[in-house]
Length: 92
Image (spheres, one colour):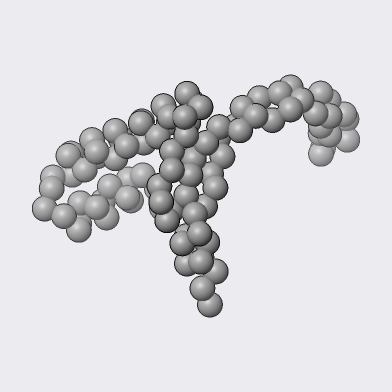
């Protein structure tokens, strides 16, 4: 699902105008992004948590040329799914 699809589905299931829904979705995503960048993270009970993880420098290999290169340390966004989400995904 793309962001536009999410906005459309929320619009279809509410009495709010599409412009208001788009504003709310943009504000939520902006705040989640700011929290991850600042290192604070975001936890949504039952869904999961978003946080910033540190990755150490490492030796990498270019799959095309098999050339070894040094990959510097960096921070990456990380999502850890909550228990309820894991259970729903694994339902048979």
